[in-house]
Length: 233
View 1 (cartoon, rainbow, N blue to C red):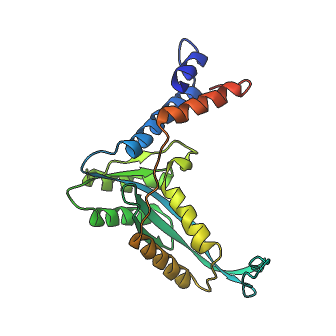
View 2: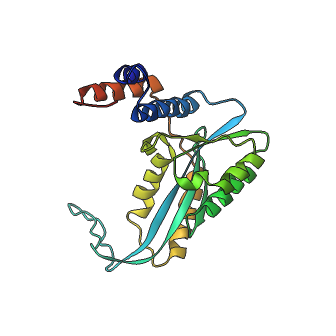
View 3: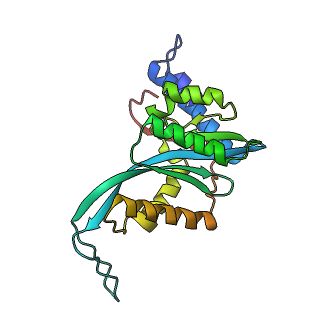
């Protein structure tokens, strides 16, 4: 197991700083995966993140459609019309997504999104958002809001482990099925398209099912670390 292996590699007197960070990340893996595989009763588990700097791109030439034996041919150059940011919360149980678009990406906008979640989630349910370690999520204004809304219990993924957050899988769907091939001459047109696609998704939601246990993930990481010469952890 990775945790015992880290301790063996550390000095007998005390754990190195790097090893302590690894052990903290192990706890985060167990916490997040535990929410996926055994969610608490009378609670909603939400995978939350921001897809920032979504660009409204207008191709310099019309996209040539796909033909027999010929792939679709978009032009290589484009004109940027501006950007927007999508805050999204994926309900792990149903696959539905609560989304909110903002032109800026600050703690102010994140707090507004938390207020939106508080309004849309039934009052009798506890809320367990899974987040990354972006500084916006931990500023004093957000902490103050959370203290006033005790039904919110934040859970953080390990640093550099956005793959643990299932909303990233939903962002991939949005990118490949709507944004990558889209043509938008303004930010307003881009935001209309995102809202329309989000509404269509929620009409027929598809939950993403997590299958790996924390032990399976950590055992693979430990096996990889053992193969790295001079690995400190």
